[in-house]
Length: 500
Image (cartoon, helix red, strand yellow):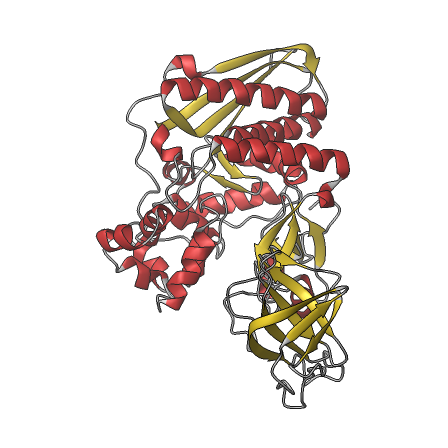
């Protein structure tokens, strides 16, 4: 991180949770997924920065250059993570350990710290790099066996977004170590879990993520763009990246293939040619391609050493392609044309009104229906405020209300004699509800369910006010409202939601 000493603990946050942290921070107990408060509790000296892929790509480019200068053939998985072949480097420097030392020294020379992992498979090497380990050839599965199954979802560039759900399911099934999952047969995994579980199972067995491409991509899949005027600004680079991504994916779609390794090449007025290869665990979408082109050009244009002149031509060349079916997601969800079109529309609205203007709901933990929804800005990590899988005594049973009433209007609940129905000290109703009055309207009740008492933070010095919820069914044929969720706050009944 620019401006931060290499010996300071650093954590990157997205959605108030840690998404990356330095080795020094990990030594103090900071872990991915921690809340900001918990991370700072483990490490009071922690330097906290916001997640910014554009910034990360820009600052990471000098690191990629020194790695490529030390061991040619580097491939970027994401800003902050690269992979390269170890066999040639080990022969040149004498051993894998000597090659790792050379790379660490080269990265330190540009003011960054590096951790290196060496293994037969890319995913195993990435997991080993988090521990600075060199895995003996053929021992990848044994090395992974004792590690927590959560490691299968620890690297976003190698795992699908739904990998966290798979890890949670494996834990609940009692498969808490990677070795426990690896002992299942491929047929058992394929028949009981989704498509991503098959890939995760290959990772658990230390097998390659995918077989190598059988043939090189056709030359006509390469797309070029002449830059007139030449590009010397980041905003112009972003626009060019979107143009190239659109052209590339049109060619890939026509050929019935998808790209998994992409070479970005830039030529300058001075005759320089800069090339970088980006690797992706899953086939690249147009948005993924545009992001990687923008990141790469941003890094080149802002890195002082190169290029020495504006960029006059850009080329995107698929280095490895797979059948287009690899991009089709299964019955558990996917990114169709409609989803992508809606996402682009929301991004445009977000650009006009601000990052917080477009929010999406995520299922969260809680007892009331409003608590069980966490709204998160579009683009941020979909992390709920509370874990929905934890037990929540007093939680409202299904179904949830069709409509939540955030202003909670006051209503009156009475018995057959017209007396107010209240709540006893034991959380019970004083009488059977018979009628509901809401403003100027009044309905007889066909039935009711509950009460569900909620007592939170009773152990603290400032406990939350107790609440009781009741569902009532209306005798109302002339209205769309069929039932109402009521909540009692020690003084009045309030309408919290309606069932249509």
